[in-house]
Length: 147
Image 1 (cartoon, rainbow, N blue to C red):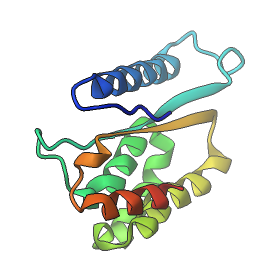
Image 2: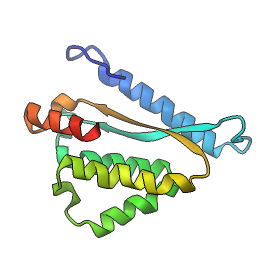
Image 3: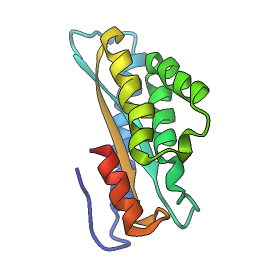
């Protein structure tokens, strides 16, 4: 989903609403004592990153580590795989975006997925990409790393 438009039309509000709803569904599904896998074959869970000049959140180097932290927080079984990468890769935020994405997101998910107790529909919400530091070149590099 790509939401675009001029500044001030409510894109961030929409993204916050989507993130809140998906995270609430995830928490409800996994904490509800009456929840059963047969009734809910997939769990929505994920992570968010909201770039914002106003809140001084513009450092693109923290993008993938923040997304990884969110995934680890919402998918406890995934946390050890992500923690291992942080523990064994000092200076990971200095690597290329592609290397960060692979190390912090792709490889941990691939390592964890065969052992997951449930199927997860993982989402990552990014807002304010135009507000990250580094200009258009950095925006393109981040987008290419995600692909």
